Length: 563
Image (cartoon, helix red, strand yellow):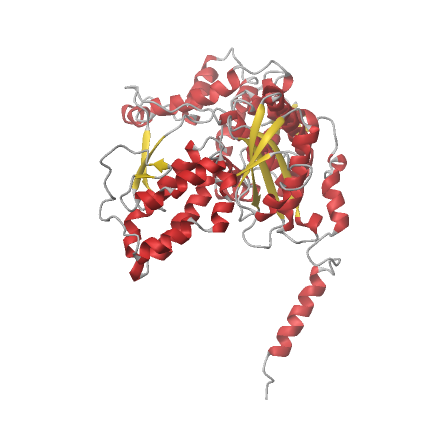
């Protein structure tokens, strides 16, 4: 829109013929032909397109009237070069209102993600036209493109590659990564303010915090990792820690201990939050941390889903063997019984153990025994396709070994609250994976701000309502579960509104205003890590030319000698 407005400013409004030609040109640019056949094509998807435009407009409708917001909320369109030149040829001089000489129109100096035209009118007066406004001496459209890539979790390489396919000017990758250094400062300030607001909202309330660690690559060769601490009740992420393998001498598994200790120390000693319970998976590292002095006063719970999965896997491996096939129909019932025991023991480990051992009587068709009884309704039948087990059968004896295993019973104290970490894992699998794909490698600062953006995204959109149709029924989506191979249905949530984006984009723009590129630098943490070990080898780079020459020399030695 800025492109058209600035060009239309030069048009002589007193000339009715020129006005008619200009209106026709604008209609041609936006494909608003008056032909019946073309009208039908445009109107075919008009309703859906208008809805999408309204969603975009809603994001910017309530922004403040600052210089940054005034620039940001203006609509932008993609216009072809030929149409721009046609518009310039129909323009007039601002000094004498004379016609622009088409033969004098030529491109001026390079502008990132934009274009500058210079020309003269019929009376020789020079003029110019620029396709983008400027902010702080920089191309505003170029800045918006850069922020679009960063804040949406995209990749500049993929975006620029797609732009090449359509011959779209978007600027250089070098400038993008240089500007990202300063955008980082604004994102870090915004993230800190966001987390402080979460702490203020939850301060003074006893919290049960789930923690899990995610590595940037699978296996034991990870360079960076993320520890997320989430309130299990509200599912707000209350803290995040990012680690680098250089902090632990390139031993990736040690990062879990470093990040969990650092995060717990902050939550317990440096934040206004009151933490009474920590929930994690069955990591031996975290279990040992929770037994140390600073944290052993906290309740430690393990994820009951992982324990149930291990139980089901153990029973399934046993049921594959011929003497124990009788256990196969009972696996689901035994796992469900474990869940029921954890959810109804009310924090008492003795009650959990008592009810858990009752499965050995129930599976023998004995529902009342000395000191206990089954809680199901009378007339309960055995699972479909199965039968009651006899106490002298091999299947029952093996099941009794599993149920009464000393190591298994010794861990029951971690499951008395029936906690899960699924919300953290869901954040890793969806939101964080979008902002930090594992197939991409990022610098420390880039990885850090992308994690921050993922946390902000999650906390702002975690309470989205279910999308409903015109009849008021929720939208549902069916798919096949990869684990159970069964059809399951999910309710579709409303699209994310990203209401925080205008404020964040404005903050990023203000952080770069009037500052030269030479002053943009990495964070202090990133620079400290470079001093520890600049690369995996621990040695300085000998130069690509030297390495290439050595490689070619080795290949030459491997070639067979010519006779």
